[in-house]
Length: 318
Image (cartoon, rainbow, N blue to C red; front, side, top):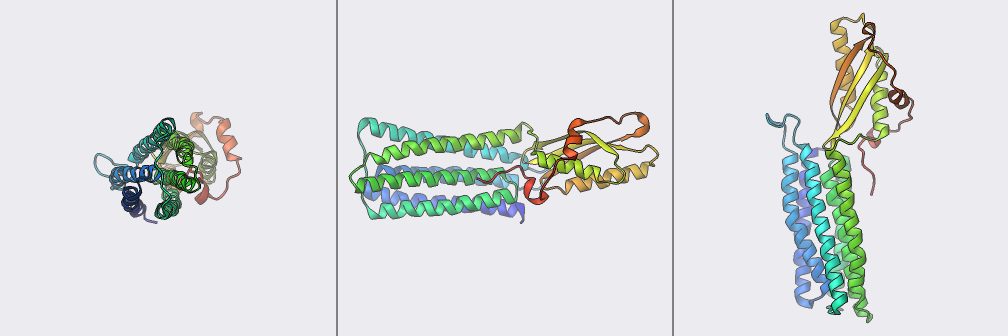
């Protein structure tokens, strides 16, 4: 899957879907005056507005390396994700405020229109499809911004469900279900915002990747026939990608060309691990007395690991 193409396509699909939903909900809101449908229309309109910014951010992240950004632009992605989180927090706060003021004032505008039921149920279906699509693409190409957009679409399933509960409540004579359901859902939205912030701040502050990935790195280094040991292994996120540095222990009778070949082979091997970007290797000849024990490297060398293709991106299924 082409990463740049997949990310740009995902951004365009999200924007188009949010615009269409905003128009559909706005038309029903204008016709019925329902608080539930109106909140959903505002939610979709805000989604469409920040989708423009997200699409622009995703476009920047897929630009090729240049003189000022020799490693590419992928490190912008966590900032795009944090912008999505701001939109999530704003949506959660708005829903909570509207629900609270409606309950306290007793001013609850609802509708029993079948059209409102249809548009809200359709919203849930569309948003579920977008959620699964964004999650699949985001995890396949290691894009935290697309994953964050997927989580935001999961929120919209919750808000549409709450609005649907309100409409159905009005049909059975319990209009207060509208703001009550919205208030409950608002906390789920706010928690999703926290999830996005937590994951992407880790990318920005250089979190270590999962243990199984670190174990794969150590074991791949030790699998080279000329490497006798490793120590001072450091792997950390730089944006959504991973930089690795390590010291490898080799016999000191190697020629400079042989040492160079060992280093090059090992760098290429580790770079082939999914999501690893740069690899920095320092060679320690035995005769210089720089070999040393490293309990963490020894532990990782014995750690069982699974499929490298499916377990090294640091993401988790939602």
